Length: 378
Image (cartoon, rainbow, N blue to C red; front, side, top):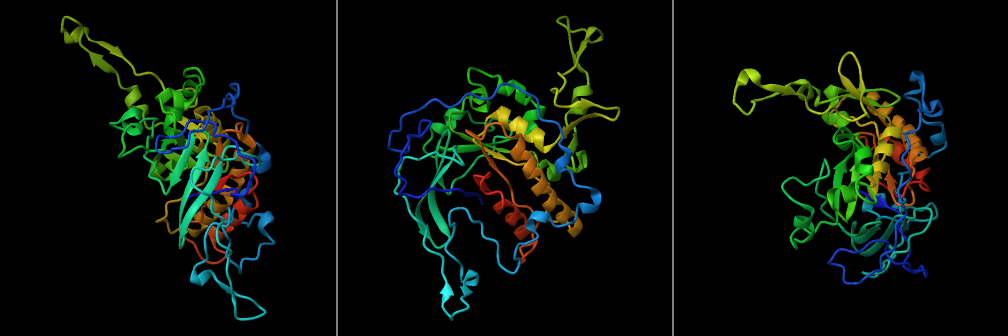
């Protein structure tokens, strides 16, 4: 589930969408020139200001010390839902329950207004049914009707399909796809993607003119846990392709004489990795994740979070991950170079602890304090 910042229908200043719209949208919107990506620069160095001492790993962040944990923490993004029966509270002055006002609705095909503090996202709610909503999420590469199916293109491609197969199919016609920062940083390297073509970025690299969401690489802390070492600074991965890269590939010469076969090695992974005596490893810090996603140029970026498998029974590990996710989020915000055309979303951590004042409430409360920097959260 993704919550996003919205705008009210009565906004009187209307601006055209900065990109062309998918064919299912009947209203034509003039295109404008998007700002150019920033000039190449390395990711910032680790800032010790954001690093916690080990004895503080399980301490509640000081900014949350005054939160009333006896009340549920609301998502807060644009009065998101009508309350459920269990969410209604009795007013102290009487027995009448407190009911949230209905969501303001916006007509379909309304042109978006992109404005601060989130100039790359506009959210229109068109209809509701209980807690279900029909909406349009406007992003730099066009509108997205939600609910939406988002295919996974881990390495910048949907397996077995070309971009044209998707955009020219009435059955598919997906308005957004997902790519993975960790895998693209390994192969082919985000610097190569950044410099591809005229404008650069993954859109041009793969020939896709619609929206892209990138995962931060945090999920690989679970899926590649055996190859990962997690610290306060970030997560260090062993290169999963290293064994294959070290093997010589033998090829017969033109005469077919196996004794004269030549050996060659696959290209080494990009410079984001560092050689050690153990193996080739890559340190992925919050700064690095944002650096790679800025190079990729995705419309929605995910902040690097400390992810723990939901089947873990280590409550202390969940607590550490929740508080660390908030510290890493501040690092991600400070490292973000393209807030004008890329949206940075944090992801709620806390495992399955949905109790009142539990870890998920704590993480969400931390996000609420940073609402002005986050166009939405997942």
